[in-house]
Length: 534
Image (cartoon, rainbow, N blue to C red; front, side):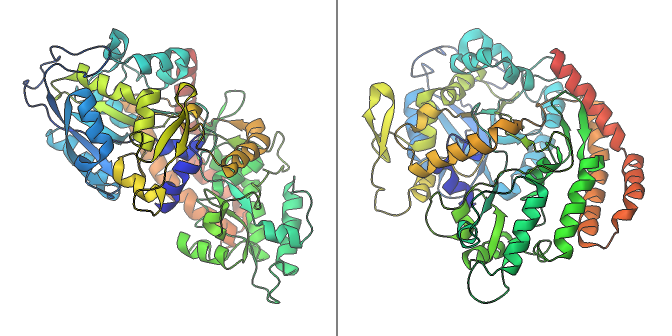
């Protein structure tokens, strides 16, 4: 969690910083009856939104840092809008369970916020009338900021329109985002000791570097305690490494020509397994990879033992301060034609972050409320707090800001978590470089340059946000549930040598038997529908 919190200030213009950019919650309407459908006196522009106060219930995830009803951001929003929020929050770890119980019980909030509404949930509960269509309110003038974004980026609207033609949920939007996960980093001290002047460009060169780390004591302590490559169950490096063998994602993805693939049955996947097995056999991949925690991995980094690792920023693992000494890994080329590639962030959340339920008596007012978060002022409020608390304008006309001292001292991000719900959860709203003008550090700029040079030229979003029909979704969910378990087990066995790679054909036959080809068919059809706008 701390990793996420730190990231949001330092890299608001990149991927997961976008993930931390907005959050909030609300509650029940006190004046109108359920399903009233509209609220008298809702303004299409300006504040307050309503002529008479309205109370709405909202269900949201909560990072658990502070009482939302006492947060300055939400207090300011209530004063601006005239809409009071009653919060029905659940901790992040138990939110999915509580959300399912709420849907099952029918005792609905008026709004779901930061709700992680999966495509299947949007289709199911939208078609049942539990979630109401939102496009009407967007197009009728109750969401001018969001409509402007959707008009400028029609693929976003298309990606959140279900097969029945309705939008039941809204995304978080960051069209400039690149990182999908935390990338890979080199230990700069090791590179310097090894006098490496150019980073590896091929898998063979990468192997050679990792071998040197193992044999040449780059931490200088006279012991063979260096760990060339470390991981936590491969979840932190898998997607990045897949790109070395031409694969954009860990499951299904569309290549540059629009052909859908299921990665675990691709030839590139065999190349990945073969390489990782070689690293394992020669003790170049941490043998605690499948058993250690992220904290244990970080402890090795801070002990100056690790050469190559994944994290949001390198100093999260290695310690020290933000700086340009530990370079972003350049993706390397393998024997697969067209490699390397990089699966980039799609620019929107893959799940819905906001929805209005059939219990909501004021959908127009609710849409106006959320629309503010898709504006510069609203995004600023929810990401950085009210003006003159943590920041002030240096040049308001040009949106240039500067940080203020943290009230009472302490860590800015920790304090920010007490003033806004936009902390540690994926929420509705948008990110734009304008929001952080004047607040970015030299380290932020360096990160941007590393990303632009090493990842952007080979980057492609793995798959658009598509919707399967209810029948297709049920079939895909069932197939992937079994496939994911089998593939994960076999990955560990192949890499550690418990299963010889000579059994690859036997493995492929089993994957196909379990539905690997059917997954390709289902998602190719969905991709083709999306691509044709149908």
